[in-house]
Length: 289
Image (cartoon, rainbow, N blue to C red; front, side, top):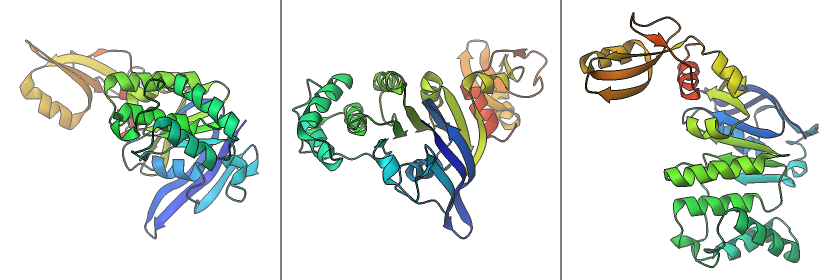
C-alpha cells in the first residue's frame, strides 16, 4: 500500500499557486499535515480525494495514476472534508444508509457495517435522533463513520477537530489512532496538539510549499538546544515578542515565565529545555530554520 506524490501543484490564478512542487511518498500510519490556515493543506487533500485536478505533477496509488484513473483510488477512499454537511432531518442511521447506497454497498452488508460504525463512534444511543440536534462533536463522529463505510485503505480527514470542545477533541484523536493500523490516515490541521497526539509522520507546509517532512522524533531533534525558558517582567514581554519566537508564557507573582525558540541563547538567565512540536511548528513556519 503506497501513495506517491511527485511535483504536485495547483494553480488558481496566473500569479497564484495554492500548492507548488510537492513530492511525498506516504506509507501506512498517520501522516499529520501541519500548517497555518491558507497554507495549501485543503488544496492538497482535495487533489488526493480526486475532487480537484492538479495543474502539475502526479498522484500514484500503488503505482496507478490517480488523475488518469480516479476510480482506482475512489474504491478504497474515505474522506471527511473540512466543511462536512449533514441532512438535519435524517437520523444517523438514515444518513449512513443513504451514504452507503451512494458508495454502492450491498444492503445487508451496509446494515452490518453501519451497526459496527455506530458502536465504534459511540453513537448507538443517538442513532435514531435527527442529526439537526447533534453537537459539533457528534456530527464529526457521523462524518468519520460515513468516511469508514467502505473500510477504506486511505482515510483523509481535513481539519476534523475545529470547533470541538476539549473532551470531544481527545475522543476524536483516540478514534483516529485506533483506526490507523494497516491503512494510511492523512490528518490535515493547524492544531499542533492534534498532530502531536496522533501522527507517526509529520509534513509541515506553508504558502503552498513543503517545509519539512520527518518523524516527530526527528523534527524535535532539529530543535535540540534551540528552546529556552526564563522569567521576565511584564514590561519586557512586549519587547521580547518583537525580537524572538515566544512559544509560551505563564504569569506568576514575580513576573512572566517565557518559553522562547532561538538558535542562540536569548538571555543570560535563559536555560535550555526540551523542545515540543509547538516549538518546532513556530520555528519552521516562521522561516527561521
